[in-house]
Amino acid sequence: MDSLHEFDTSNTDHDGPSIDFSTNTIITNPTTLPNPVPPSSSSSTLSRYENQKRRDWNTFGQYLRNHRPPLSLSRCSGAHVLEFLRYLDQFGKTKVHTQLCPFFGHPNPPAPCPCPLRQAWGSLDALIGRLRAAFEEHGGKPEANPFGARAVRLYLREVRDSQSKARGVSYEKKKRKRPPQPPAALPPPPNTSQ
Image (cartoon, rainbow, N blue to C red; front, side, top):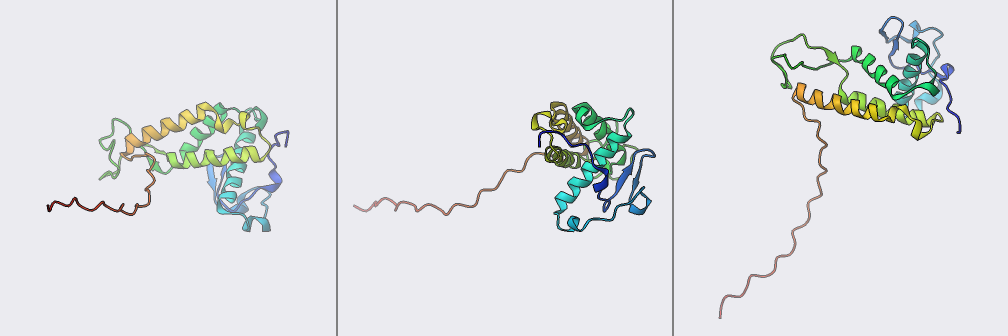
């Protein structure tokens, strides 16, 4: 595809929660959406990843349509993606302790605290990965992909590092374990009898 296709609202999948950006609420019942579209028969044959990617793409499209002023996908930049990620923080479920909190750096605090709930870094990272793929599947050029912008990568790194410190959780990549090698045949001991 040579041109970037704008969001198609007729192919919306409502089998997961969506966000009503006018009221900042999460909608879990698809019948409360305007013009609900029944899930297509093809959605049952798609993988869980593909279904989630389509829901994420439609949610981002809804965000752009409700943006003030409304924003077309072709004019979307990394700054708009950052704005979207910060907006999603209000729906987060991960407690991120501030530096002043006595539980800063503790993965399992012993008592409640007033620290904010945020989107977890892993969720944001996966979301950006799905939106980055969806952008290119919808005709976007990889070099123009706002989800792959340097600012987005830096933001995700900053979120990862700050949440790692605040929650006392390491996000280091796990090293792949190599399969155990069979022990090499040892040379026979030197003959000491003479």
